[in-house]
Each structure stands twice: as C-alpha cells, then as structure tokens.
Figure 1: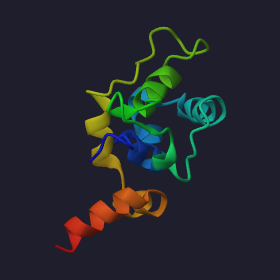
Figure 2: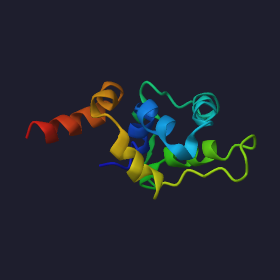
Figure 3: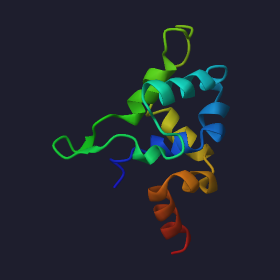
Figure 4: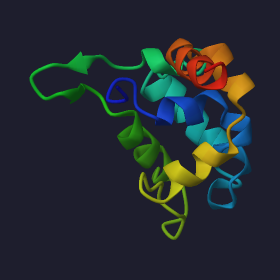
Amino acid sequence: MFAAPELEAWIIADWSNSIARHPDFRGRHERMRYWLSQEKNIPFNEPESFSEYDEDRDCCREKLSQALVDSSVLAEFDSLSTRYSKGLHTPALLQDIRPDEVQRRCPLFRKLYNSIRFS
C-alpha cells in the first residue's frame, strides 16, 4: 500500500514540523527544500504525486527517500553534516508530523488517516 507514494511524502508535506525542526538539518533545511523543489521537481503542495509506480520493479521510478538523502549531502554543506537516513530519520520525523497539515496536501494520507480515525 505504501510503495507509491513513499512515506517520505508525508514528511515533506509537513516540512516545517519535520525536517525544518530536526537538529540534524538545522541551518540547511531551507537549502535542502530549495534543491528538492528545483532540481528534483518535488511538488511540496502535493508530494504524493512525485514519481510514478514502476510495475516491473514494484516500486517508485524515482525514490523520494533518495532525493532526501541527496539533498542532505549537497557539496556546499560541511562534509561532517549528518546524512538523511531512511532508517533513522524517517521513523523519528513521522512522529513529528501533524496529521491535519499532511492531509491537506496528501489525499492518500487523508484517506488512510480518516479510515483509522473514524473506524
């Protein structure tokens, strides 16, 4: 159910309560966001629409999680800066998102959230 879109779409949908507040990305979250929107064309107002499902590979064609990793290690950042980790950061940041913010930008999240909330 979550292969397309990736969970990271929900983190991006509430950037100001997730990446922007995390101490590992302090001082560089704005540049990361700019790079993701300009270089990877990630639509921050509807991040679930990023990429397409690849039936042959059974995953997204372009990985949102990899784009986050790439944005965290731009050449202009200090080489000692923390790299985004899907295993470490994704679970932590999912705890920080606000469902009301995410459901405004992510229809699939809204459907899941409402089915859980109202069941």
